[in-house]
Length: 213
Image (cartoon, rainbow, N blue to C red; front, side, top):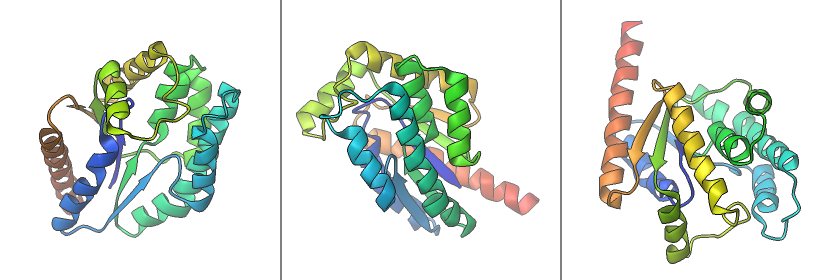
C-alpha cells in the first residue's frame, strides 16, 4: 500500500509520519517512510538546490523539472522496490505537491505539469493521500515559531501559499476515493489519532479485498 501525506507549509505532516509508521508496524506490516524531494543520494542533492534561499532566480520551469528528476530517482530506486516487496510505503509529499505548488501556486499549465509528473513516476499513484489542511497564515506562523527550516519556497508571497492550499482542496475534490482531508488545526494528538484511524480502516479494506480476490 502506498500512502502519501500532503499539505500546505506548517501543516505538521512531517512530524506525524514516524508515529504513523510505528502504528502500522505494530499491526504487523513492514513499513518504509521516505520524503520528497530527497529520499536518495541524488534526490537529496536536488533538494539542496531547490530549497536554497540563494537560488532566488530559479525559473518555474526549472523548478518543475528539478522536482521531477528527484521524484523519478525516488520512485525507481526506493518506492517501487519496497512496494514490490510487499511493504507499506509512506511518503512525505509526492506528485500532488507539484500540481499544488508549481501548478496552482505558480500558475503553471496543469495538463503539461501532469504529463511531466506521469513521466517521472511511470504512472505510479498513491492508494491513499492524506491532506493535512490548515489556514496558510497559521501554518507559516507555526514554522517560524517552531524553528523549522525556512526555505526558498516558504519565502514566497502569502497569496502563493493560499493558491497552493486551494489547489490541494481542488485536487482532493476531484479524487475523493483517494484523498482524505484531515483538519490540521486540531491538537497534534488528535491529528495523529485521525491519521492512524484512517490508515487502519484502509488497510482493513485492502486486506479484505485481497482475500476476496
